[in-house]
Image (tube, rainbow, N blue to C red; front, side, top):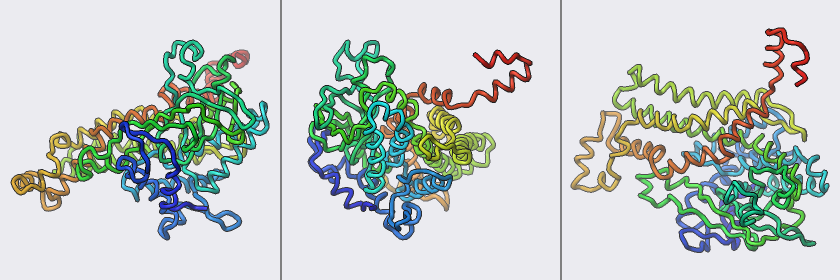
Length: 483
């Protein structure tokens, strides 16, 4: 079934324990800090029911039942093109960019499915649990997120040498399931249905950490689960002055697991260090596509903001300006090329799915993330200093100041003062606001730290070709290939 926006809002009024700014949130969809992003997620649900988007956002199975295209298991290149088109439609419709809408996290379950044989070594039930949850997300149109890093504490010490709760771990087994304690940071958890809770990057080869090698599905209203959220950015200035901040802030939370019972049917692996290591190494083989695709949309926003700004005064005709715009285009098209090539050269996965070409995908992610700070600063240069000195909308409305701002912000017959103001505040919010700074840091670390991005490139690249080439060119003996 395809959920509607209203059904989604009702479904997260489920008694979950959410806190923000020292306040217990009784009604998440109605709370002023959550409402804007909840409305965005609800809009994504509603799009699948509208005539103009139905064929883009959903598909029909062999029983003629409709399902969300984002959650469809990818088995062909067309599936990936369809997923990409659906996200393009969402971002264009909402007029911005959001990371967490579900398609970027369900892929982690597909990665688990690829590792069923590893998980079944310990208990065959775990493989069955994974398959059931994959289809549960698909069949019920569940907004599924993924709980990532722990507070960690002192990283020079093992968890057992400090407060053991610094990494989430199992404290007890019962007939009903396992009891877990600890904490995880997660974006969008407070307005999602469930999360895949998984181990952080750690030395999973150490048998002492087996209690920490656990992965499970947790509903966001589980007993003992507390959402302690960072403060929201929405409401800092009017929506006229901060159009992105006031619509697209994806609120992050520290999820505190205070002896939460996880039923056995929701456990995906437990006390299995090899499984934990496998999951960390393959976790993003699908989800990195959606994550990198988001950055292409961010690049489009920067290009549009920069080009409109320089066109207003004819600066786009200057060679130096065109070179800077071309750098932004190169950044955008580098992302586009890696995504396109990753589909064109897609690879079969161990479970029979089709995964984007791994080294091309991971290389694209590295390029998208590492170049982002430079591209944001380049966009600032092209937009000019007025994005940081322009008065707020109230001054444009006040009769004592409005005529002056009308005079100095009207550029020509094509650009009125109001259009100029709107473009400048959009660029300011995109590049300079608290929300923009938060998003930049988030993009650099959201899927894992930069060293992990590079390690994924290293482990996924096929080095045999370069080695064979150099062996032949340097006339090396066959022994060198045996090392």
